[in-house]
Image (cartoon, rainbow, N blue to C red; front, side, top):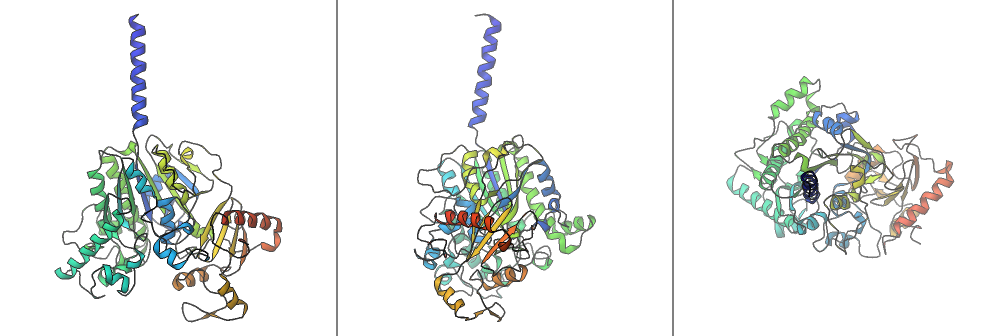
Length: 524
């Protein structure tokens, strides 16, 4: 064989070997979820805040401009992110206790991961990934989340007074043991590592001194997971409590709080993983913003810290980093099916794979994330895994065709279908509530006022603020032209009967997926 031909064959073989090795290398996944975050706390979306790292991420990665969550409060949204299923399909103990088969579901903060059903972490774990969970949960053991040290909580967790001092060694030991129990419960659902856990919102710690955000603590736990697993493929679910209440723009709950107060009690040694909190305030002022706006820069620093850690470990080209809020803020569309609650920014960065500065404007949703991650990782879902979502992997590589034409959403007593142009929202109550409405009986409001119709959610606090911010909140049928009226203030049901008929048919088709779950005339 001629020497030149032999060398050519050798080079081709080497190239093939390298290509196969690269194809076989599975990416790491970091999912960074924020809480109650609307567009106005992001600089690149026009918010009057300083968020340089997120602005840079939008320039260096892919921005999904019409990414949606299909339920707009914490638990059901996170359930859908982690499972790829609509929250109305939940079979968790609390959910089924509230909604036995045959009842209309009222999707809100009662959804939880089921021990005997698939989620993304379980599948990745079984396929050689190390899985980690850091930060806010709100997706397991709702029976422990009883305000006021109730029955369920007393059976599992150690108690202490609301005004307890976490610096007291005995009190702190109880808090540490409670945190360990929460971490154990999360590990049971497919996570090898669970630390830096907030059971739900800060108030569920039931201690005034701990009712403060601590991004430093959670980032430190994430660093440990990344450092310990840098040599193996990993999936990290990182969920911050920012920007949920207590209001982080009131710095006594955030940047001016004691950085040693954590979800596991008082940690004397503190943490050294982020710029000092004083430095956050200084840089925010230097950028021309007030101290009450610095919470946005603090969260931005957390994103930057994880991105920098990944780069320092030499994993930047091997890691898909995803940033996304769980839903919009209560100041806008939280606890409704309006776009300011449903539509949230998703940023994806994967050095060397995703083309910088790209956008996708089609309809994408949180139910799509789990199938996408499996697709990106080259994992075939188990035969009995029930997905509602669609993989959007091709979008990461430049595809711009529509992923779907219609998206279904659910929240409380409301259901919706959304297209790129239109949204139809239907509110239907169970028969017993409809009977009370027809009889003219009134319902109690959050502040003692009397209502002709009840809130969409059991949670009166959520219902009160959602109704106050959205003028058509109680209207049974609503149609919006998202192009002409993006804030969804003008209900044009009477003006577009053909559009309404088509969207009502689409809603009926969507609701047929939910067996034995009535919803007014749509299920008859």
